[in-house]
Length: 457
Image 1: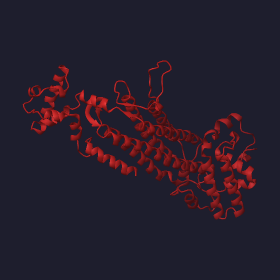
Image 2: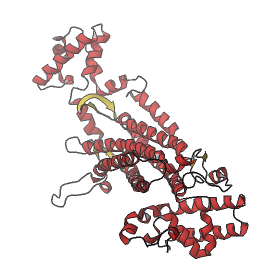
Image 3: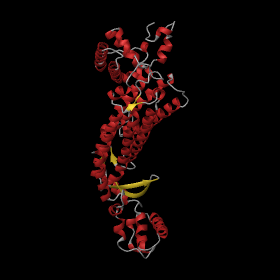
Image 4: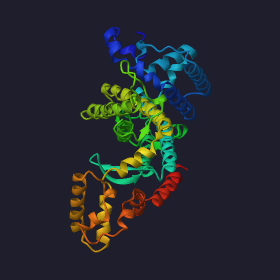
């Protein structure tokens, strides 16, 4: 038998079974983490006098040699050896002889793969946090430049009230800030070490699990060996966080698509982030934000897939759990690509301030301020609301906007109107007046930008 575990079997594995059950075509992504965990494990075996110094040195040298070959792309992994762990062990035995087989003392592939995934996800979580901050910097830079650029704010995709464009962009900054906080907080769960739990019940060897946990930068070992090898909730948490983050990316992408359309014309994306049509030469398609929006279902699917995979599994490890990796890998790749594109796309976006200004002077989004104006003069807000509703209806029927009406026309609806109503209706005044904490008033947006910068620093 050529299998490292073949002693129990009388027949070779059916070729179809071998190909179907092999995971090496995707879990080879864990090669460097697998070697990292193996080096920590063998050092611990030496420190605990389970292996002698000569054996430890030879195994470490062999692992370092394989590590270099992996980094240089000089290793060919084989389906015959099933997964990354067996492939690395087989390469080690070929490199240093039978002593390489002693590396597996006191551990199992079950705790080994769990450790690899913890190491991988920790590394990628830190990388994603950096990429999120890149997007946040682009948002802050654009917001700082456009504090006093005014566009219509929307509810129900209907123009509601004028807002600072900087304020609108910063809404996404804080969404991404919470995503970043969730990623940081998830490191508490990622930083549990499964190594040494063995197959499910621990090992009779006098190992030191704290030593390997410390060597690999984990906070502590899993307290329960069954939990250590069957737990995948740290991946579920990552996929959940990723689903929330891609939702935020998708919502921002949708706005970029709308704002860049002929109907809005609020922004123009740089040509480097758009494509053309094969048949309509005039087209400039926002393919990047459309694809970012489309990737949402992919990540949601990975979360639902892993939830479904785990929901009926008894403790401890089951072969079903081989299906836990591809969704995690793909989600990492998808988010890394999305965030890497989103930051420069936002940074290079042209903001059409004039078009936005036209929009807020040719609508009724300042109507609420007339109601506030009357309320300050003593008219109950509900009565003021009814008065303004009638004014808006009158304006629509006359094909006018609120700033087009004369003072005499306003007085037909209420004697409380004076000449200062036109100042109150100016979009700049409308926005500046909303100076409550967290509001769109220019002074508040400036404060918000400083707060955002503090979070980034």
